[in-house]
Length: 601
View (tube, rainbow, N blue to C red):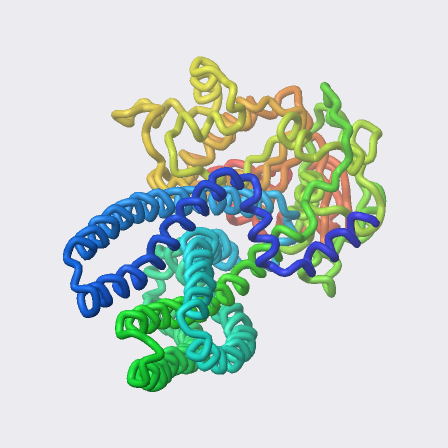
């Protein structure tokens, strides 16, 4: 059986069976917990029998000494029960935490290792909901609920056996109501599981809106769009509430039926048991004990019914979790790991369409070559495919047609995770910083770098200018996504990160487009140092950043229209490049203090 067929078969395995399989590594702890659970349950079953003895001894034998002995042993048994219950609770809850932590870890690993196309079609809030909300629902199932199920099964079975020992006639009367309750459990269970899945999906969409709004709060505030976002979130919550109401409606009806069945059983026992006592076929103590066992069995069955609804909800959550775990892994790249990388890049007749937009051809028959140590600029209007080239080079996507070669070897032959880690560096238009210190953000490029190496990288990136101004220096927390730093400061941190990585190939994707003139000057100076002796791909919208490139490739509508140096391309006044420069000439003149014309761009 191939991997694909195996995954299909795996996805058909009921989610509960797979949840229990997650618990197998902890079987020793669970066995110990089950032992204490059995002890605790059996001691509970002793209680009605003790009541029978005390009542019959008081009414018939009038033996105070035996009553004292019974009470003493009962206290001793309950002390044992208290210890067993305590140990059972600790073992099950702690083991459950370990199991769910492992599940969360696997789920997180599965998500972060998915192909980039996966994130084009799956919302962040929904994925976070699966890691948090869904696993929390599962956690309750594989911890307390499982122990409660086992406990109530023991109580129900043990109580039923003792009922039969006490009176077969009364026991058969009770069993008449069991089949209808069992059928109701199966009937409502299927509906609860289905509505639970819909409820979790609706809640995940509400979480997505909340996550999106909070992470973009400055944009929301700048447009005074708080009321709009509140309406969006309220609408999503209403939908989640509607789905939850359907689920709770099924649960309410089911619990009403089981509650009625439980008390109906007790009413029948009181009616028929009273007749047996009246005719002398049963003692008052035996009837009292039978009623208590009936309550235990009825309560256990009702609890199992309630737990069944929780299991159905967990089933819906488990389906959402295993949907991620069963999906294909990201890294289907090759195995080649070259110690050195020259940085010679070739695009040969490359065509590409984003999986999420398969009706739009982003690249069409694109061909070019970047020689080792050469700096190449890609220019063109927005949407021409410039950034797509960098994403293909990073291995985020695979081309639909043609091939991409690195050092005369097809890119797909390389282990892309290793290649990105060792030999490709990226400085983006809006660099992502993590909510930690400046030191850790720079060291992200090379986790094994020493403090002196980080310090040197910061100097080369012109970052010491502002780092030294912070009281805590490199230990300054940058805030979420680097919110405490300016755009130029974040950019220089990203450059320092790339310097520390020391890649053979450097990708600059609009690295200075959002900066003011002072910040741009400092960043450009740092980039010039960074670009030395390495292959550099410059993706530019502002043409003022490409004049020093070795060559310029002009893209438009996914095709390579022109190539050459800046000066060569400016000679073709009918070409796209010249037209792009003319459209930006006023901005360029302003940027260069009116000291240069188009030919100096």
